[in-house]
Length: 170
Image (cartoon, rainbow, N blue to C red; front, side):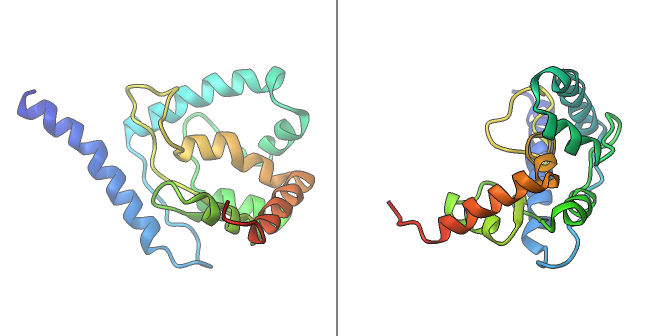
Protein backbone atom coordinates (compact mmCIF):
# COMPACT_ATOMS: atom_id res chain seq x y z
CA UNK A 1 0.00 0.00 0.00
CA UNK A 2 1.16 3.50 -0.75
CA UNK A 3 1.64 6.13 1.93
CA UNK A 4 -1.45 7.97 0.63
CA UNK A 5 -3.56 4.81 0.91
CA UNK A 6 -2.33 4.13 4.44
CA UNK A 7 -3.03 7.73 5.46
CA UNK A 8 -6.56 7.72 4.01
CA UNK A 9 -7.29 4.46 5.88
CA UNK A 10 -6.07 6.05 9.12
CA UNK A 11 -8.39 9.06 8.90
CA UNK A 12 -11.59 7.10 9.74
CA UNK A 13 -9.78 5.32 12.60
CA UNK A 14 -8.48 8.57 14.06
CA UNK A 15 -11.91 10.14 13.65
CA UNK A 16 -13.57 7.25 15.45
CA UNK A 17 -11.07 7.52 18.30
CA UNK A 18 -11.76 11.27 18.55
CA UNK A 19 -15.54 10.73 18.62
CA UNK A 20 -15.10 7.94 21.19
CA UNK A 21 -13.09 10.35 23.37
CA UNK A 22 -16.08 12.71 23.35
CA UNK A 23 -18.22 9.91 24.78
CA UNK A 24 -15.63 9.06 27.43
CA UNK A 25 -15.50 12.70 28.53
CA UNK A 26 -19.30 13.06 28.66
CA UNK A 27 -20.74 13.85 32.08
CA UNK A 28 -24.02 11.99 32.74
CA UNK A 29 -26.91 14.39 33.11
CA UNK A 30 -25.48 16.86 30.59
CA UNK A 31 -26.47 16.97 26.91
CA UNK A 32 -24.68 14.58 24.58
CA UNK A 33 -21.75 16.23 22.79
CA UNK A 34 -22.46 17.45 19.29
CA UNK A 35 -20.45 16.06 16.41
CA UNK A 36 -19.89 17.93 13.18
CA UNK A 37 -20.12 15.10 10.67
CA UNK A 38 -17.94 15.05 7.56
CA UNK A 39 -19.21 14.98 3.98
CA UNK A 40 -18.38 11.27 3.74
CA UNK A 41 -20.26 10.54 6.99
CA UNK A 42 -23.26 12.55 5.75
CA UNK A 43 -23.23 10.64 2.44
CA UNK A 44 -23.18 7.35 4.34
CA UNK A 45 -26.11 8.48 6.49
CA UNK A 46 -28.03 9.58 3.37
CA UNK A 47 -27.47 6.25 1.59
CA UNK A 48 -28.74 4.22 4.55
CA UNK A 49 -31.54 6.68 5.30
CA UNK A 50 -32.82 6.51 1.71
CA UNK A 51 -32.72 2.72 1.63
CA UNK A 52 -34.40 2.16 4.98
CA UNK A 53 -37.03 4.88 4.86
CA UNK A 54 -38.19 3.46 1.53
CA UNK A 55 -38.80 0.15 3.33
CA UNK A 56 -40.37 1.46 6.55
CA UNK A 57 -43.91 1.99 5.21
CA UNK A 58 -44.24 -1.65 4.18
CA UNK A 59 -41.80 -3.39 6.54
CA UNK A 60 -41.83 -1.51 9.86
CA UNK A 61 -44.68 -1.74 12.33
CA UNK A 62 -47.18 1.07 12.71
CA UNK A 63 -45.77 2.07 16.12
CA UNK A 64 -42.28 2.46 14.65
CA UNK A 65 -43.53 4.61 11.77
CA UNK A 66 -45.55 6.81 14.16
CA UNK A 67 -42.59 7.25 16.49
CA UNK A 68 -40.13 7.82 13.63
CA UNK A 69 -42.22 10.78 12.43
CA UNK A 70 -41.76 12.54 15.80
CA UNK A 71 -38.06 13.10 15.13
CA UNK A 72 -38.20 15.02 11.84
CA UNK A 73 -35.16 13.20 10.45
CA UNK A 74 -33.92 14.07 6.98
CA UNK A 75 -31.47 12.53 4.57
CA UNK A 76 -29.31 15.68 4.62
CA UNK A 77 -28.45 15.79 8.33
CA UNK A 78 -26.98 13.13 10.60
CA UNK A 79 -29.07 13.64 13.74
CA UNK A 80 -27.40 14.64 16.97
CA UNK A 81 -27.90 12.36 19.98
CA UNK A 82 -28.78 15.42 22.10
CA UNK A 83 -31.73 16.23 19.81
CA UNK A 84 -32.91 12.61 19.77
CA UNK A 85 -32.63 12.54 23.57
CA UNK A 86 -34.86 15.62 23.78
CA UNK A 87 -37.58 13.85 21.79
CA UNK A 88 -37.52 10.59 23.74
CA UNK A 89 -37.35 12.43 27.06
CA UNK A 90 -40.41 14.48 26.13
CA UNK A 91 -42.31 11.40 24.92
CA UNK A 92 -41.33 8.73 27.45
CA UNK A 93 -38.86 10.11 30.01
CA UNK A 94 -35.89 8.26 28.50
CA UNK A 95 -32.45 9.70 27.80
CA UNK A 96 -29.46 8.84 25.63
CA UNK A 97 -25.92 8.53 26.85
CA UNK A 98 -23.03 8.43 24.38
CA UNK A 99 -20.70 5.45 24.55
CA UNK A 100 -17.26 4.96 23.08
CA UNK A 101 -18.15 1.55 21.59
CA UNK A 102 -19.72 -1.76 22.41
CA UNK A 103 -20.77 -2.21 26.02
CA UNK A 104 -20.88 -5.43 27.97
CA UNK A 105 -24.49 -6.70 27.74
CA UNK A 106 -24.94 -6.31 31.52
CA UNK A 107 -23.95 -2.64 31.31
CA UNK A 108 -26.24 -2.02 28.36
CA UNK A 109 -29.18 -3.72 30.09
CA UNK A 110 -28.50 -1.88 33.36
CA UNK A 111 -28.81 1.38 31.44
CA UNK A 112 -32.25 0.31 30.23
CA UNK A 113 -33.28 -0.23 33.85
CA UNK A 114 -32.60 3.47 34.41
CA UNK A 115 -34.29 4.56 31.16
CA UNK A 116 -30.94 5.27 29.54
CA UNK A 117 -30.10 4.14 26.02
CA UNK A 118 -26.38 3.98 25.30
CA UNK A 119 -25.44 4.96 21.76
CA UNK A 120 -22.30 5.40 19.75
CA UNK A 121 -21.82 8.61 17.75
CA UNK A 122 -19.42 7.50 15.03
CA UNK A 123 -20.55 6.59 11.52
CA UNK A 124 -19.70 3.31 9.81
CA UNK A 125 -17.13 3.24 7.02
CA UNK A 126 -18.47 4.84 3.85
CA UNK A 127 -17.21 2.06 1.56
CA UNK A 128 -20.02 -0.25 2.74
CA UNK A 129 -22.89 1.97 3.84
CA UNK A 130 -25.32 -0.92 4.29
CA UNK A 131 -23.00 -2.91 6.58
CA UNK A 132 -21.32 -2.35 9.90
CA UNK A 133 -19.64 -4.97 12.08
CA UNK A 134 -20.90 -3.23 15.23
CA UNK A 135 -23.54 -0.62 16.03
CA UNK A 136 -22.91 2.93 14.90
CA UNK A 137 -24.99 6.09 15.18
CA UNK A 138 -26.82 5.23 11.93
CA UNK A 139 -27.84 1.83 13.33
CA UNK A 140 -28.85 3.31 16.67
CA UNK A 141 -30.90 6.20 15.30
CA UNK A 142 -32.57 4.48 12.37
CA UNK A 143 -33.08 1.18 14.17
CA UNK A 144 -33.57 1.65 17.91
CA UNK A 145 -34.11 5.23 19.02
CA UNK A 146 -37.53 5.78 17.38
CA UNK A 147 -39.15 2.99 19.41
CA UNK A 148 -38.01 4.68 22.62
CA UNK A 149 -40.48 7.46 21.73
CA UNK A 150 -43.34 4.91 21.78
CA UNK A 151 -44.60 4.72 25.39
CA UNK A 152 -45.67 1.07 25.39
CA UNK A 153 -42.41 -0.11 23.82
CA UNK A 154 -40.30 2.10 26.08
CA UNK A 155 -42.10 0.60 29.11
CA UNK A 156 -41.35 -2.92 27.88
CA UNK A 157 -37.66 -2.13 27.37
CA UNK A 158 -37.51 -0.55 30.82
CA UNK A 159 -39.02 -3.72 32.36
CA UNK A 160 -36.42 -5.85 30.57
CA UNK A 161 -33.68 -3.65 31.98
CA UNK A 162 -35.09 -3.85 35.51
CA UNK A 163 -35.41 -7.64 35.24
CA UNK A 164 -31.79 -7.87 34.12
CA UNK A 165 -30.59 -6.32 37.37
CA UNK A 166 -31.59 -9.45 39.28
CA UNK A 167 -30.47 -11.96 36.68
CA UNK A 168 -27.67 -14.38 37.48
CA UNK A 169 -24.38 -14.11 35.63
CA UNK A 170 -25.02 -17.39 33.82
